[in-house]
Image (cartoon, rainbow, N blue to C red; front, top):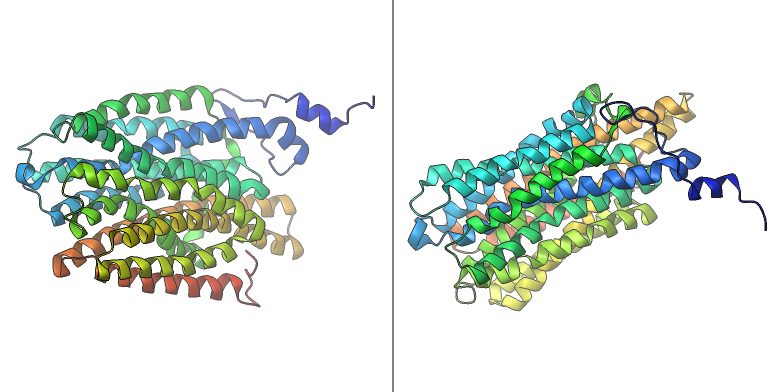
Length: 461
């Protein structure tokens, strides 16, 4: 039998990566094939697993009020539909706002360390909500407590910036897509938990949702402390954030991410209320609405890694452009269904928007490291040291992931505000659907002009 090659030996006998106190890793070379196969892959996968779990719980807490509003009948709590839309808008806004400091936190404190802190912070909204949520509670108190749930939205940005540093460029689309998709699953899972509570305990027991999640928060924090790592290579990013704000691609990608992730999280928060308000006779009870609310977010989350994988194979910009074209069609289907009062067509159109936004989430995040990888190749061709160009690309892509994640999340705020205003003025979501169609067409045009147009410096991203 032929002796095993060095590469075979490395694959069958993984080498432990050296760490110093605090689980800091100083030597991390994912672009080195031998290092990756022998040492990097198992470490990266372990960190990815616990990153996904923590982010998943964070998304569940962030979208908690998309479920809890179904437990607040107007006759008992005195909150009208517009008031309920505000209860889901505030956590979306805070979640978007904290994403930038959460990204900074990874560079400042380390990915493992910040995962511990960010997971533990989820106990604040969970416990506060469990304490105050009962008939007779003041609406202002509910607004404050719902806003606290926004801390769960920050977990996404820190998790993505952290995982971006662990994986080689050729696998970033898959890794970031899996990380984000697993996190996004927190939206349908908490909605399924709400459905379970509604079906078994009834609308009078919303606190049971919190009882189920508080132990999971503790597990996420403890698991991160015991089994995740910090990368020294991810610490030298604070100046990159300021540099990235002067980069035009930061704002272009943020705009596109409003259309993908902003749509996903906005629709995830609003779908149940839209069903209840637009098809009142079909969804007269909270249980009826909850029975469908989870479907779109579930499919959109599960398909997100596919968006990253397709982007790895065909190019992020190409998949993103196809996605926006299809989303414009999906929004047109929803608008048409609303005009004719077809519930079946309405659900099909809305679920397609969730699925497409999931694909677009994966492809847009693949575009970010690809942009700076292209820039790095151009810098090397101009005579710059290859290692320095790669380090700069990593810093900039990590910073841009934080910026795009923060700005893109505000799309969820805009979606909820659009629905709130549309229902206030017309009693339906028709005006909002027309706005969505126009916006997706603009996103398609921007993607083509900047990243696909022949002659563009970033063509082929």
